[in-house]
Amino acid sequence: MYRDVSSCNTYNYGDALYWNARYVQEGGSFDWYQRYSALRPFVRKYVPTSSRVLMVGCGNALMSEDMVKDGYEDIVNIDISSVAIDMMKMKYEEIPQLKYLQMDVRDMSFFEDESFDAVIDKGTLDSLMCGTNAPISASQMLGEVSRLLKPRGIYMLITYGDPKARMIHLKWKVYNWKIELYIIARPGFEKPGGCSSSMKSYLEPVPITDDGQLPAEFVLEDPDSHFIYVCKKMNDMDENHIPSYTLKGDIL
Image (cartoon, rainbow, N blue to C red; front, top):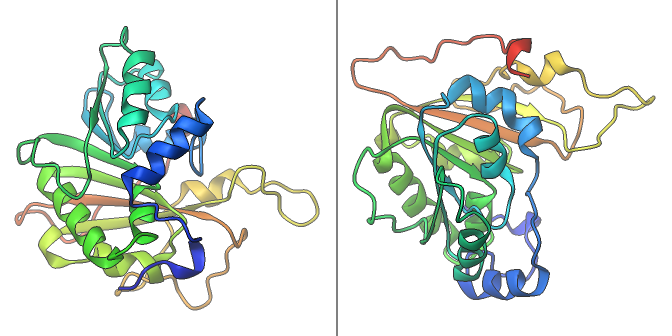
């Protein structure tokens, strides 16, 4: 349970001062890792449009806007940066489906227990893993995510972290999450020879071992792939697995 040293630079991505300075300097909008168009099949499969959704570490991304255009009705967006939140409040003041609050994901006590159907995280846990006291920050955040999810709610984590780096944080018994893993190539990746990554391969969950790791023989098509962990908060009465369904073309 260490900091993601190999994937981080000298910036403290868990620090509000860093993000405030960055948003003042850059402005505009930026989506980490993947745009909603690539993530849509997964979001639509696991998160109904009527869900109350919490977008953690929203930054200045277009993800929530795109989800509203796709029919989502209630998205609460939080970020540690007051600069980002002020910008987004102003930008979306006429969009009632979008709400913005300045908040640290390690302390979301503003919200009541079991108040969200889904929590979506595109790079926020990664940011904490690049900060100081990374393991403690990660456990604080994930504990809060678990607390806020309704029974059978979904935490969807989009990350650069492979199972060796992330499952150690996600598989704590206290969360009672059942996890499915998907792997998606980075935008623009093409297989050697000019063939793009096949739709079938990334729309199917990746088999994982009993301890949550990739099989020894598994080979990533794209060595810089992104990983999507779908964590379902189970009831004690639920069975010990999440049923697997094939993603269909009508949600692509």
